[in-house]
Length: 111
Image: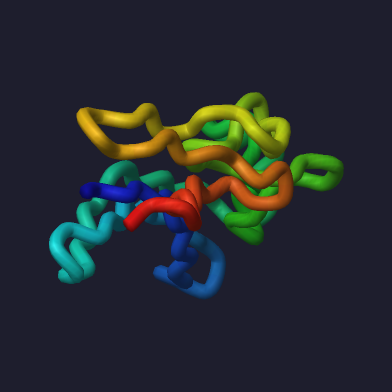
């Protein structure tokens, strides 16, 4: 099973410049793996962000937004509780959004 979580990490490159690296993290057979997904470099205080949910200065969701990305994040808001975020395969069970996090938690009733 691969559970995907998008993580935003901010790095100060120079005193007057910041960058955001979006990493895709997953759990594969109990080994944590991280893949660089996208690099955004903007000057501190930039008014425009290439991601509609991300504040380029803080690398956090903009004011009034809940999330930047993730399987349970759509249009900068958490998806409703009970929304399927991972469909079942074979004898598996669906995983559902909680409505309070952008992550797709494992169904507690799975073996």
